[in-house]
Length: 493
Image 1 (cartoon, rainbow, N blue to C red):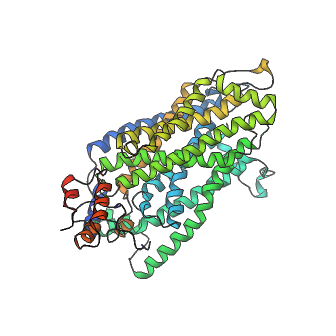
Image 2: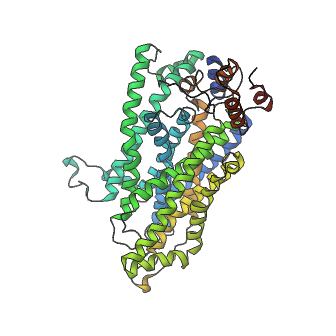
Image 3: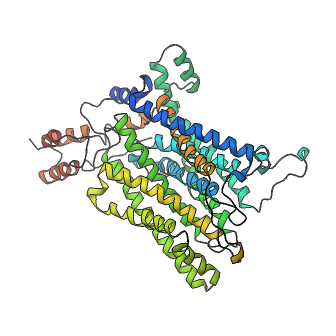
């Protein structure tokens, strides 16, 4: 994408000395071209074991039926829909980082968009498995799509939000996959040009004949902007439609118009938290500190803080709406959430989603890698509990006390959820093994405008006064990829 003139006072997006175009390519392709290190193998083995648990648990569900889950006559939805909404939410940040930030010309997206896009693809795959599994008859899953008349009277009910889910998520997945793969083409071509033998043939097929000509780059930029324009409405539409699974019902606790914006904010919140979890590990294990800098980490923490605040306001608004409605059933549904048998889940949700993100108001916490990583995990735990609270506490006590029941997950429920996490990380680690985890071409655009190397050169040429230099030096003290000696060198000679 084309770059623009940037203030030399702004914090750098690429650090390190003697960074050249060739070095960027070498650094980012190192995990792809060399054998995986010990950390990758440990992570992959653990993730693969989780994926095997997923295969066994899902296979057992298909063989036995969804009676293998902890569902009962009152709680007909539980962990299956909780996990589904959780995974769809995690997939939101990839599209937001890739599409929305591209349209707004935010250069800090360039180092993190590739992994965020891959995360979207794998999260939606995990979500889709729940759609098929909770149908009860997975071999008839194709019935959710409009079919030719030769199949008989199988036209779906377009008034059902579950049908909207199928169309929204399949559209979201398709557009996200095309956007992700189009962005990969120049980098796959780089791998192809450096490979030999069978590996070269495979990457040659995958690169679709990319030749790096001016015309090719021009078309690449146009297609990227078009896909970004198409993807941006999906950020709002997909989780809005998922929220309508609940909002279009008449069940107290679900029947509320605040769900669409509330679900979208929560999805972006959990999605950015997962991106943070993945990137902080990736930058350390793959030595990407020069390309995923403290500026990226702090920017994502700010978004987590803002969206967490929006989610907190949504929680308070829900309580107000329940009270203001005057409906005793609605008021009881929320009283039951707060002080009923599942009170511990509600307060876990409130602590993780409302209180923990507010810690990012403090710069020391916002720029601390260990604390950022822990809080990103805490946020996703809280977002899982949010979906659990919305679904289970609204169902387990209905209008008839005689039908009240508690939900207790079985080993199959737990196995499918833990296994889906293993499946997700297996796919993500394979992605890092065979494809560049950072967009090489887009990082190279930053070298002459937003790199520490370029800004240092401008300082040495005397383009800043003493106060500006001091301001810039102070901003670098939080960078773990910039040494004290490098900061000391930034003085007007």
